[in-house]
Length: 517
Image (cartoon, rainbow, N blue to C red):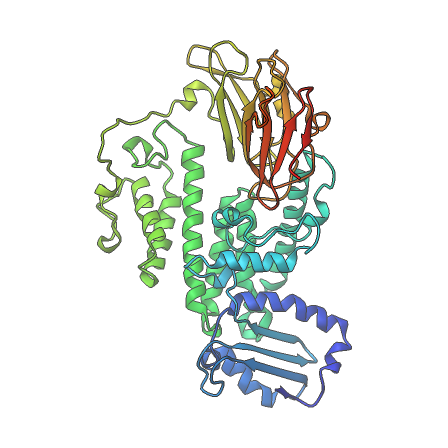
């Protein structure tokens, strides 16, 4: 149904109004989320706008539309409801869509995975290699903040050829642009006041949250928690205007708690690492020396559990946070306590000691794959580690035979190989020296894999292109080397996340042919 005296063609004549409308819809959708008509009518902003329509004399047009699978008049059931006011001063677009949305209306049941797929489908190109198929990358969604999707500009920056360093450059540029955009949007709204009756002020919580997520992505957890707490404060100021305010508050309480816990991990497990750090159950030596992160995490987890005491994930994190401070189990609220017996094993197998630091293989990075094998045929097992961050590299640690390792990353040539989700050893040319197959793009965006030939002198050469294994960019995370045709040479079966797997037959002359057909 419509209200006002002008038709929708009035709106269509002004491109600036349409642009502002489209920009606002996503933000409002994220804030309002899943509501019922009765919730809308009973909210302060619903009453405000409903009462203001009759007295708003400078309105050019007003459009209201409601659809519900049940009784509209009673307000029961889930509804799709939107209100648009076009006036001489501003454009207000409110949209409450009957879909699960991420960010401030994220739900504790994990349904943000669906929202992520819906949002990415809406924001990224729907054709070509950049398209992310439905269901692909769910692991990435699970481990990342639910409201941080790849910026759409990333598609423009992503390399189209075999540029192994291109993904890192594209990610830095896209997330740098996104951070600047978030800061610009915040600076234009932070000075405004709710008392000014400026509807755009309701965007602040989500803008703060996105800025916090971007900072966390870049590893700046101090800025991340500051932005997320600003989102929490601004949300509390407008709670009465949001039908889903309590759900949004719970979402932020969990997110801020996790972020503070991550801050504590970075300050202690990484910056002040020792052999007992971050190994559960924590010993006295593993307790945090810098306590702010865990203390604030406990504060927000307790707030969250006051509203949703049945979330086992948050209860688990609460207990671990107390453990990092040496206050477990005594100070854990009794109704949220996970008993010490849950951390005990029925079998006494002793306790493993972290010797990575004295051994010289304790580099900081995003875990990918790892191989422990003898790459120089000296009888001792070496270690090669891949890093899931495309802005880092592979790392090669040579076993010195005395319990220590030397970093051969640079001298081996592996410093020129960007990180990868997984790696596997093979001897594809039967020369007795273990080669490397590097798999990239899994749980992320398509990248090129690499076949690295062991030269037998501690160095590796990238032979991907001449070998015939460079067949394009994929999301790859697994491969198996075996002699499928019994000709004495190892073939390779490559598993891709978002498309058909590939089988390459080893021709015995250092090259492969794709026999997947």
